[in-house]
Length: 294
Image 1 (cartoon, rainbow, N blue to C red):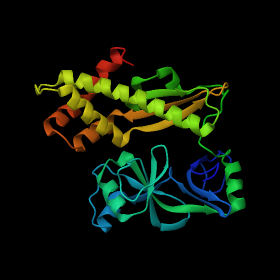
Image 2: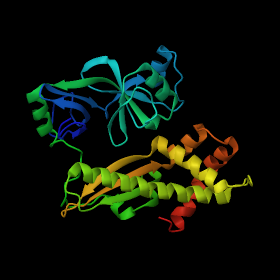
Image 3: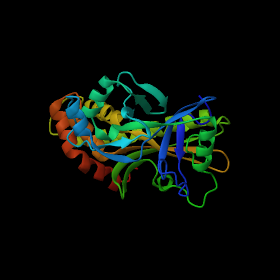
Image 4: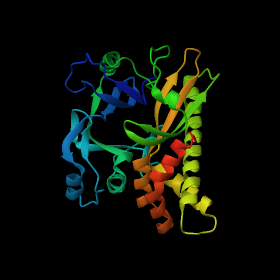
């Protein structure tokens, strides 16, 4: 553990190293001997379905391609994911996990493609190399936006609730941490607050879905809320942070509506209720968004 790892390095546009140009690196380990990281924003031309076929594993129908994790040992796969229940996973930070096991690969390939990335290979640096890379990437740490910038992120104005954006429909929660001197503790507090806010939005959507239901079941609000929370846990994630000039930190937790629908369709529980929820989730979202429930 260090000030750099676990954390994110984002390459500045001027970096011309072909291995790291415009890359985003998940720095997994950093100590006095050097560092190890995984590039996770460079898609390869290797289809996940081909990897699954080679290993005789089921692959989700919407799975895309693997990613180029780095120039070292590209025959090795590293799974960066958000599913805490996957066996043999190492918790890095927040909702980010790392696994290299065959069992984890089998589980993740069959599940929601949005919940993981399979990165082939990794990047390694000696003590000097990682310092140079960190400088070339504009620093390191936890990817907090610099305070005092000219533009605040749009999610600050959008707030908590049902939000329509260029990328599609989403539920989001915005949390804040104030008066916390330690940056790590402040980050944890902001993230926890954002998750709580997002859960409130998910619960509001579940209540709307219960009102739309034609099943006539008793205790339907509790059922839809439980199913929605389980589905949300599969794909919701902290997406961004913002630190103000006075040291307050804000975080945003996001749940894409398409991911929620897919998780409902593939999840456990009452099949009829889940199917109905998945079919009505767009209409319920629209009611929240137009009704000012944000």
